[in-house]
Image (tube, rainbow, N blue to C red; front, side):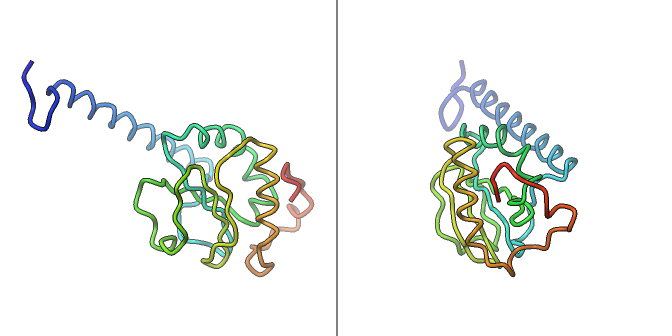
Length: 161
């Protein structure tokens, strides 16, 4: 086979590019699903929000999405701190560049009025996540919490928040 510039065969280079196309297609499909279902926010920091730094190759991120994401938007914690997802490998949004470095995925950074309030590094399972989340959400100043509608105030959550 013919050797391509930069190493490897042309066929191998085309195959690598093809896998990247599939990853891009999968990411686009996920974005469409999140948009259609009112998924996680992607805009600048709100009064309070939970920023999830993740990676497409992260097994623990996928577990979090399977175990927690279907529940999270319905919880008291989500009303206090809506979720915002950020790919660790993409350039960070300007409003998050000042926070301390993130090295592991998933990492959840609780923000209030643009400042870091707390963080959870890693995902060790559903029960432990709710325990950790409850502890960091309690650190939120009251004024940073968006007002919940009266009809949702009485709703319980798996996190006990």
